[in-house]
Image (cartoon, rainbow, N blue to C red; front, side):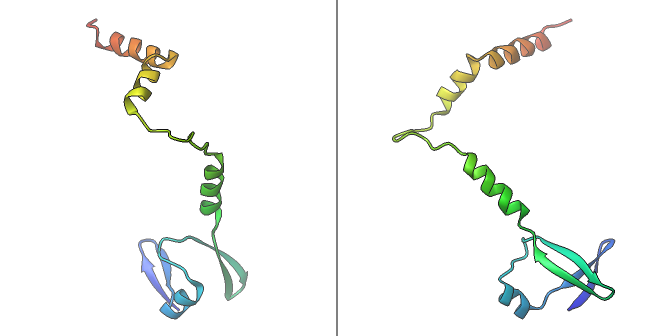
Length: 97
């Protein structure tokens, strides 16, 4: 492996054969842990993937035949307490003082 200057940091260039064997891509993240005076261990950082999976598990499926209608969504917002509050604030900001 070869070290290279990258801004104020040092980057490690990973040989193509190692990339192919590990199946890694440039957008992946890794964790580096120092294991000795001249050695370190590199592991994949799975925190991002785990967070995305946790968010996906929170998703509520749409009912059968559901069709997204943005105008219906806007109507719901405008008729909500928050929608009325934001509309009132907007009107207050537009009034001359």
